[in-house]
Amino acid sequence: MHTMQSESKEKIKLWPVYVWSLQFAKPYIGILLLLILTNVIYSSSELVIPKFIQHFIDVILPSKNTELFYYLIAGLAGLIVLGIAASMVRNLLQRHLQEKAARDVQYSIFQHLRKLGFAYYEQNSVGQSLSLLNTEVGSLQALYRDHVPWLINNSIFSIISLAMMVSTSWRLSLIVVPCFLLYYIFGPMLERRASITGRTLSGNRILENKQVYESVSAITELRVFAAEKWDLNRYMTRVTNQNASLIKTFWYAYMRGTNRRITYYVGGIAIFIYGYYLVQGNEITVGQLVSFILLYFIAMHRLTIVVTGITEQKVLMHQIDRLFQFAQLKPQVSEVKHPQQLTEVRGEVRFEQVTFAYHPSKPILSNFDLHITPGQRVALVGTSGNGKSTVLKLLGRFYDPQAGRIYIDGIPIEELSFSSLRHTLGYVFQESYMFGSTVRENIKFGNPKASEEEVEAAAKAAYAHDFIMNLPDGYDTIVGERGVKLSGGQKQRIAIARMLIHNPSIIVLDEATSALDNGSEIAVQKAFQHAFQGKTVIAVAHRLSTIEDFDQIVVIEGGQVVEAGTYDELLAARGAFYQIKVGQNEEQEAGDE
Image (cartoon, rainbow, N blue to C red; front, side, top):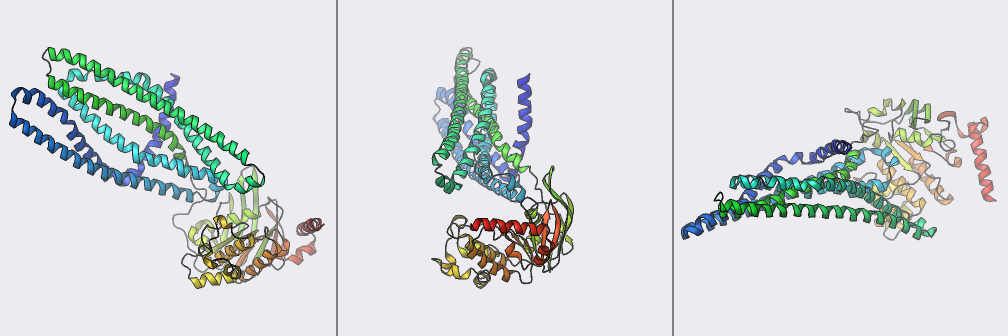
């Protein structure tokens, strides 16, 4: 009883996964119907051959009718030609269905990965996402490239062959029933075991892929700490687990094959014995017996392939289930059906009673209020963990607040289209991502339609042109993966050029200079001064010396604004900002010593 309940729950769980998996064939239903039709033609033309043999044994050989023999050969040749033609059309249609559906799978999952946004990437590692795309997407594509076409082909073949067996001898056909039941004595147990090992195999594969990604990504740290052996041991543990799962999976696959072969060989012997007595009693002819035996082995082989195919798809569904669960995830931030567009952006920003928490028990912002006028330069300061970077994330709708509203030029940002919001804001992060292509392409990422003159003008405005021209190939220099060939200051100046060519109305800086040396910071500050002209600027600042000339400095503590004013005003007030300044001076003096 417990086993039956477990199987029922498993079916309930896997059936929605299977239905979802097949949805990618919907746009190609016409191709699918034509594929079924060509399969019927191909299967029929091939399965008529045993009937030709029956006619040859029972009619042509005894009568020695040469003319009828030639008609038989001509008819057989025609069937072969028809079968070959149907097979060619079937293979072509099958390939179209396979590749188009597989392409749609890849595109759909990749698009969904992008829609989930910032929140998903903060909660899930890159290794997990890559494994999802490389492994689970591959499993779903295998459903279309291998399993579905095979299931259609063999199911049609089995149905037609069983019908022809019954039409040849219904008495002999009865033997198929116990033979098929014999297959199921051990079949379900082997299938369940295969499903369990398939699930384990999928999990181990994801862990192995994740380990490979981490090993490659952390190569510098591994060498610095001489931890190559430690990392190799971790990797080999994953590989060993994966190999053990593979061996177990293949063992059950071989056992299923052995069970299948024993079943139809036992049935074949039974048919020979029973058929002999039927021939002796003149209840069937020799030709009927021969025809039936040929049809039996074809039918049983195809039937067991269908059962095995269903089992393998069941195992595959356990792997695809992870992809199915991923596809059910809803973006935490979504665009309204009829969004507004910002045309002429003034750059006014207002936070009203904004409350936000990554986890309900730990609020980051609480009734947060902030008003920034157009063209104003505002710096957010405070100790770590008080919500400065969170303010910038909420402004860009990386997350939505649990309460309160955020406005740009008087329009709630949740009513703006994503494209309008993204074009209004220009971000420079503490660590800007560099694509492993040329300097030019990294700058043009901010505006792919930019001309060469605009690229160079942006680089000059970012104080990057001179060092770019000193690179081996100038603007055509390959910067390497994540900009490995560039210094921190050079990467930041290229990131600023990218932001400038994007031409945003509101500039957002998230500790953009905190990791730079003094020389690089001076160059970046000059670039900022040029970029700030006529723009609204919101900056999270770590080094207070970089924000001395800002229009307003906002001190955030406990998720609220506790002080606001100019640099000199806040120092004179000797409040929270003053304490932060004193703490930085003490750290600097300790470092100098």
